[in-house]
Amino acid sequence: MRAPTFSILGFLIALPLSSAFLPHLKSARWDISPISRTCCDFTSLNLVPLSRLNNEAVFLAEYEKLCIDQNGKLKGQEEFVLGLVEEDEIADLSRFVVAAFGADAIRLSQDINAFERMLMSPAAELLNGYSNIVAFAEVFSGTKQRLTSRLQRMNLSPPMVRGLDPKDAIEVAEKDSLVLAIARPTQGTESKSEIIASIEVRLQPCDAKIPFSLPWLDKVERRLASVIGLGDGSPSDLQPYLSNLCVDEKYRANGIGKALVKCVEDIAQYNWGYNRMYLHVDEDNVPALSLYKRVGYRDVGHRWNPFWAGNAAAIGYYVKSLQIKEPLRN
Image (cartoon, rainbow, N blue to C red; front, side, top):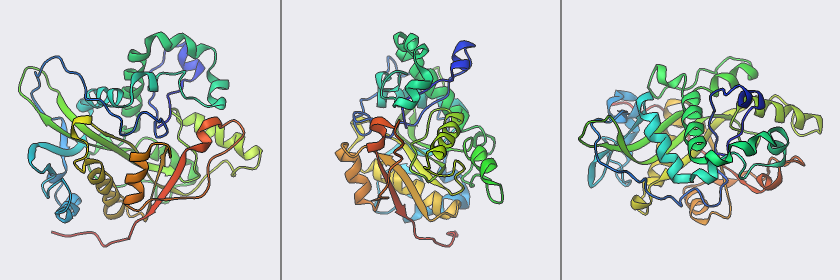
């Protein structure tokens, strides 16, 4: 993910904010503090457990060596369940992501490249005093936007992009992310969950460009890049893209991150029918980079590097070849 950005028009008329991808923050991924909660007054788990998806998640049967069992439960702590995030869970997920990456990392004026700054300054500076509110609204609104189509069907089926022209396919993919979380319910008076880990996968043009918060900015930047000879401005190759891997600090070193990566890879293979997975990673973030290399990701060998990219041009762009398998059957 990258730091959130705003449409100037949207800012002026107070339109809802939309969230960002933050894969390149040095202090974010794998440097995660537990969420502070003032009470344990939760009642239900607003997830769709993968174990309830019948034949869609049968790949869980192959997870003997991972920390998640064939029922999608965390081994040794079976109250924690792996599932699809539902609409009622987005608020808790957003709080978790803000705690994971930090409000200062998500707030508007931090860690944006020269192109974003050109579009957003100086109006963006007015929002910095509200970083915590802005961070939560940014993550909540953006996540809900990216899950628009997925929330209508709540299964592991692929985004319906086959046969569409590139422009229409990108617009469909932008609203059909899939977010998994590991969480447990606790008793009380409110409907919330304790989330300890999450991950997101979506279809993304594989041109090495780090996604913007707002899809129209991606389109603007690609068109501008095409003027200087960097791409043609209309990428047609959509591939699975992994982002937003978060693990609560208290639960790290238990293989949860590795298990979540494996899970979205299996969804991309078995359910979506793709043979590659892409991601961005800050190469100074040694734990994250080590994990991805260990499970088979390699440097693509090129970066999105227009003259305005700034530090973002140094962010690693990695890919893993996925072995195409026949869908598993019960």
